[in-house]
Length: 182
Length: 182
DNA sequence: CATGAACTGTTATAAAGTAACAATGGTCAC
DNA sequence: GTGACCATTGTTACTTTATAACAGTTCATG
Ligand SMILES: [Zn+2]
Ligand SMILES: [Zn+2]
Ligand SMILES: [Zn+2]
Ligand SMILES: [Zn+2]
Image (cartoon, rainbow over all chains, first blue to last red; front, side, top):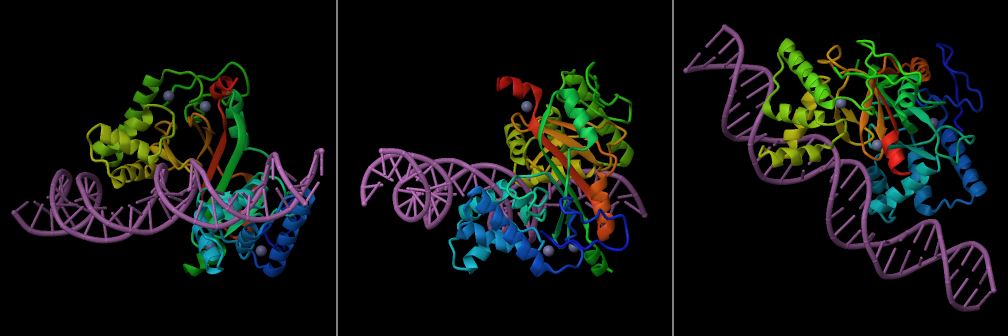
């Protein structure tokens, strides 16, 4: 679980355990953040009889190294650099494992992947989340989404449409990148 | 503008002009629906000095032929079948024109494109929308989204993140496809 | 007509994702 | 143990999606 340090300003949601509004864009002790996330994935795997094999473990660590969304081929390059097998299916299978078990998310807007920062309470099951995505540095922040926006739910109800998954991704510029652009 | 026929049941949003909750999944006079949409694009182009060139016009008609999201390469095949130039840039340029002017939308989840059904009030400018996407038949329904969901806006505010665009896409099964699957 | 801006035609290539199948390796019934 | 089974791996080949680059054309406007 990410150590969430809410700012003094603004209407930030509180860092209640379980609420999980983590602030990847704000300064934090990331080494600790990554260690905790890794530990919670290991715990979830142990609890559910999942195997965190070398390729899966490597891809997870690579994603946890920052809050930047990475493409499958960036991960593949990292695998190759580490001397591990690096054909596309290797990384897509690892990602399939991580995503389907809720340890990572696919960012549709980028065709890229980011480690989950929801913490242990959500680990082990694919869950709903919404994302803030910086179009410049590709860093990603995640927040839990309880249920589909009302207008969508209403439309679905009227049409007899069964919603199974909702993608919510906000693209923009993070504070750091905005400053860097003067 | 699409002739919106709200069902008698449910909590459907009303078909107020400007509200634009169109029901692509419900039976409607689609020939009329496509003609109207086409006319409103032509009007917007005339009003804003945009050129609806043959390739753009063809791609628009192809998208308007149904509410199914189409990939760039499906459109390319249609161009080829019509004896028009059919290299990838042809269709990507047409789509860039249609999307940036708000006449079509990219469905991120599918890497595909659908004509806009928001009607004339929104035509001519890229606008916010949320989508219902059938994972089976790929038909798409669009509804206007006023502003980002609150939890995202709060998170963005706390982090100093400037949201520029929000992707909201709900994937699931439409009524017809659910019935077809027994 | 000259000029520039927008658009077209074309070649080539990059980036993202999947199908298929033989081989390996744990786990469990017996 | 050992055979059967299932998940996982290694690998080849391929498909789908998207963009770079650049020469040529069209068209409104001065
Ligand atoms: Zn962190
Ligand atoms: Zn940034
Ligand atoms: Zn229609
Ligand atoms: Zn359907």
